[in-house]
Amino acid sequence: MAETAQVREVGPRDGIQMVKTILSAEQKLAWIRKEAAAGVRHFEATSFVPPHVIAQFADAAEVARGALAIEGIEAAVLVPNLKGAQRAFDAGVPKVNYVLSASEAHNMANVRRTTDESIADFRRIIAERNARGLKDRVKVNAAIATAFGCTIQGEVPEKRVVAIAETLAAAGADEISLADTVGYANPAQVRRLFAAVAEVAGGVPLAAHFHDTRGLGLANVSAAVDVGVRRFDASLAGLGGCPFAPGATGNINTEDCVFLLESLGFDTGIDIEKLIAVRAEVEAWLPGERFFGMVARAGLPKTFRRKAAA
Ligand code: COA
Ligand code: ZN
Image 1 (tube, rainbow, N blue to C red):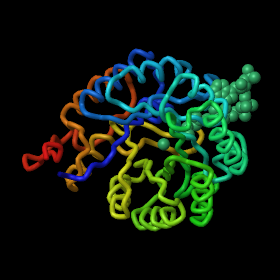
Image 2 (cartoon, rainbow, N blue to C red; image 1 turned 180 degrees about the horizontal axis):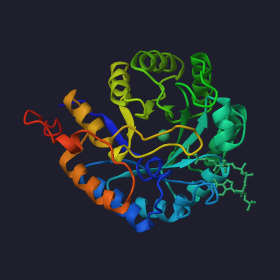
Image 3 (cartoon, rainbow, N blue to C red; image 1 turned 90 degrees about the vertical axis):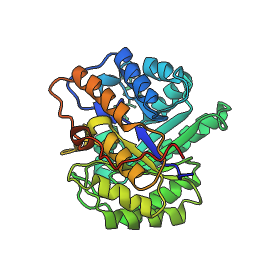
Image 4 (cartoon, protein in one colour; image 1 turned 180 degrees about the vertical axis):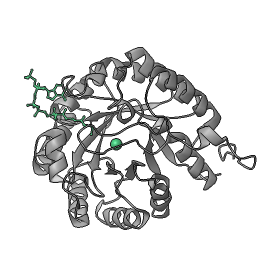
């Protein structure tokens, strides 16, 4: 049996934060349903941010509830603060991805508070979940944005990222994700930082969230695999980017990421050809957006064999 690796589709969240077209809740849910039929099991379905901050997510509660009704998938949502988490708990989601930035400057731009204030909010979210009796039913994950560098402040010290990860793990994070929000990471840095964070995370699973802004996205996936990471966020067609990080562009591409992981011998459970068909449908809904990706253009090699059948 091949070892499994998780590829989590963040297109309906990260992927559409900056696009010009506002998709309907039904389109977002159809997107998720179609990818579920291609074998994708993990999604970041929406974002509980105020509509005045990102209009695309005015329908977050509706999308979250709709995603919960889709069989066989785990639908997570992004939250930037306690209020977002409360809305997510109200909607009944099984997994909340809380985001804060290691870069003080990006945290201020993104969520209008210091990183320490965001960490305090994280503790309140864990307390609120537990007070609601949801400890065994709702996972609260923490994503550390700009973990590899920041377009506003430049360098983000690795020691600081490790210290934040250690604090979040001790505070009860169910998973810690290191995010390269602006595409600054390189494979050596990825191996070093994930290995250092693993040492302080006390067994909390680690995940990677890479953007392909400078073409190193998949090289970084490969490097993370080398140090034991098995959970990867990716976006269909490489859509995505943070509206509050200057110069941010798309996530690593889901189709290409699945191709890489399957080629390395992992079972992702995902059918790439079906994924490419979904991509063509979503493309029609997002006129004027750039759709990235190599496998969709070139097709699978004749020598390619999925690992799932094992
Ligand atoms: N969902 C809905 N409404 C929310 C909310 C949430 N998660 N958080 C705050 N609000 C509401 C408040 O109730 C308040 O409403 P009111 O004016 O009617 O009373 C208003 O928004 C302002 O609240 P405040 O706590 O002062 O927020 P803020 O203006 O300091 O903004 C964030 C803080 C975190 C809400 C905002 O910066 C944000 O949404 N950032 C996320 C950015 C993002 O999505 N980045 C990309 C993904 S990483
Ligand atoms: Zn992102």
